[in-house]
Image (cartoon, rainbow, N blue to C red; front, side, top):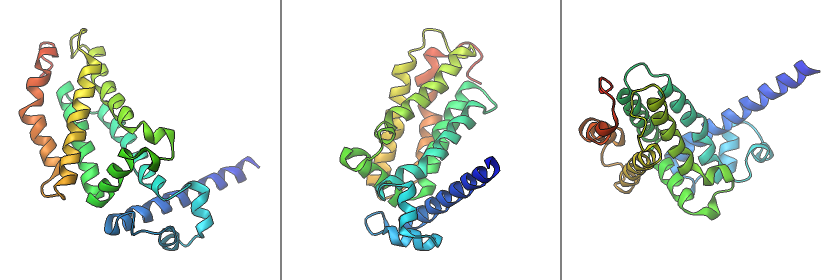
Length: 208
């Protein structure tokens, strides 16, 4: 019985993955407004009812697409080999690069849905900004715990400020219609401005 349930769970996860992949591909091309649930399910060879097994409405797909990836980015940053500054820059640049590669239309839908609470069905998704700030806080807190940053480093204030930077960059990239590279813009920030921002809190030898 347990093996049967396990196989059922594996099949369910695979179906959900296919729905998300199809949704991502179609939304990238057409935007969410011009994408129907029927298009998504048809691309996966399943019924519309199957879609509603996993999602209440198509807006929920936009958030679900990003959940696993951003968790992976955070975990990769925590284990990244290098200095504190290397880990912090890796996190910010990889975060930006993932959004850029997912495409402008998907980003625009995500921003639109995030700023309109009525379009956000899940309480988890309503807290996306805070979740990302907490991830940034985790990176900085690890630096303190490893002795790379001073014990009196203002972890909360720094994590909020850096999250504001990356979200501000994302919004500007969104508003520009993708006129430049979001990832490259973040790399520039990390090279030119991040070191000066973090220097007062770095312990000796932690800059390299």
